[in-house]
Length: 468
Image (cartoon, rainbow, N blue to C red; front, side, top):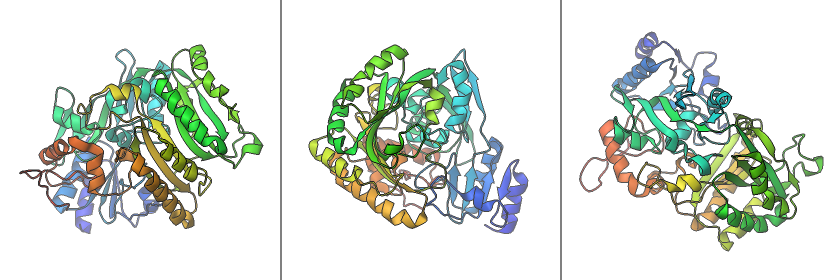
């Protein structure tokens, strides 16, 4: 790409084209993970779908490496690239709610906090994650799990349509009745198939929830994990709680004597009548009792923002994950070993339940394959200090290596770093070849390859093109 080509692109955009010489270039190129330090040749902040079409034409015609950024939250930093062009959707943030039909239209650059602020006044929510600053696009395209998964399924189970700009510049609608193969692939296949400029979701009735953390001394972690396994196996779909190892932050609502202590916890979210929710979590109060609990009724949107201040943009992150079906004694022992030795104050391990409603969808109904998993596990080394990046990376890798033999052998695509084709293939199991064929139909040249890449099927017994 040369200066003339960039100036031509700049003239075609309704949004901004940010170049390395611009004063806000360093701000514009940053993503959520401070460990990622990439320098694109240009950042196109798209104002509308026409801008997206123009940027794709530029990347295609100039054979320039392309990265697509929504919320920029991905741990591997796949919303930015060196030397190429970043198609930044962040200016496209509109959210529209039709409370009569419960349909929510969300632009591709919006965050889940913006969706919650639009839907909560109507007593509605779209199932999403656990941090409100997460981008809608990345979480959705990877599958999407969080507080409402057991009750209402994955985010993709609530997706009813999408506007997609394809590699060749066409703008299409993907739904159950239009481009249904593309719609299937978008539901879990990541950013491999096009740029989604608008999502249509069916929101669910969610107003107040009964939620908050329960903490136990880390010395009781094995006991708590066994109890948690049994409790969640029997819990109704209204009950959600993710297990965590954590260091208690110095927040004012935690007793001062707990600040900085390594503990194990379950962070709860129970939908339905508050009185019934209180009864449902009574067994958690009787286990021990806990060292601390702070449960109460709150708006769902407030729960979604609970962790935002603890995890601001710019921290160093290294994470690895796996799907899990069973917690055997060997796995519990390894969890206690590594979870009791968190390397930094913010480092953590989470076990997210993905059973309930999410398990009742056929594994071939969407690209997301692990409908038989009980948990999505992630171990995350986190710290503000770049000097600690090697330490947190080593801890996350060692923890993952110890637990991987007790997993289902593959991970949630949004919890992967740049781990290569074998891990991507394992994530999709026997859905992979269908995804590769759909990739060949909609992106045969693999324009969209800065992602957890699915190379296009090139024909004959599963042969594939080489990655450009």
